Amino acid sequence: MNVEDLVKEIKANFRPKLKVIEWKGDRLVLLDQRLLPFETRYLELKTVDAVADAIRNMAVRGAPAIGITAAYGMALALFERDVGDLNNALKALELARDKLSRTRPTAQNLFWALNRMYGKAKALVEAGSVKNTKELREELVAEANRIFDEELDAEVRMGVYGVQLIQPGDWVLTQCNAGSLATGALGTATAPIYVAKYLGIDVSVIAPETRPWQQGARLTAYELRENGVRVKLIADTAVGLVLRRRLVNLAIVGADRILADGTVYNKIGTLNEAVLAHEFGVPFYVAAPTSTFDLEHKPEEVRIEERDPDEVRTVRTAHGNVYVTMTDIDVYNPVFDETPPKYITAIITEVGLLTQPLDRNIKRFVAQRSS
Image (cartoon, rainbow, N blue to C red; front, top):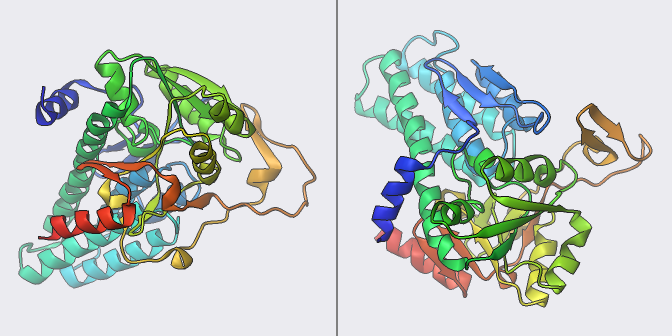
């Protein structure tokens, strides 16, 4: 079966058990990931402020899911109040874009989606393609739906290309949660795993807990088990031994931003995994759609988000957050790290694998897409 036929078949038949993002006509419904795996609760968001809070407070998380959510958040700017004429609509959208852009500074998909939505609105208004705010609102919902659909297509394609790296019986090391909870579909790093399962290939996963928010323990382990994939949880500090003893055959992680030289920004701990995998000869792959690529900035220009010190001072449990240290201890809490391209075997995208040398092959890829 060729790639296109397999992509079409998987899109028609694969359904994740957890619905993460859903548009309901005039509101956005999100699965509140802060409560998983102990409680399943959905949020109904009707305003830009509510969407911004959901992104900032990590009710929704994962770069692709953040981008999709932000796209619908832009549409909501024209639902929450009567903005009057089309010029005022553009002003409302500009304010929404600015507000949403301040929520998670490292996630490239956020800015990509916001700029795409605003650019679409501006182009429609300037071309006279819409007559009133109602028509513009409908066009923006359609554009957000397209972003969601394109994300699904990209994830299936990443899965189809990535599954070629997996052999029957393999164990895959992950980091954080780059699954369907982070994207609304198959995930990025988990897409090859789900495609392998769909094709009947035996594959298992080792998931580090991913302190401080424990996305590996709370989300990845939960999601994979719900979808019938064998998963084993480890402490973050066990990654080195797991790699040294070859308890995994390869590592696949997601990304929140990838630069033109191949530098990858992903959940804190990714750099540790990449360096250790390189040292012990374990292939280390990054899976991300091309919407995650940032071709404008250099590493020294990228702001790495730092979050609330209490995320480190506490541990999340079924009964709420519990302090594990002194309540006033000084904390450094960066939530992403920066992995140099030399530690990355290849990047799995929806158009195939980008191999080493990454800087050269990313530039070649961009040139081909632009021509």
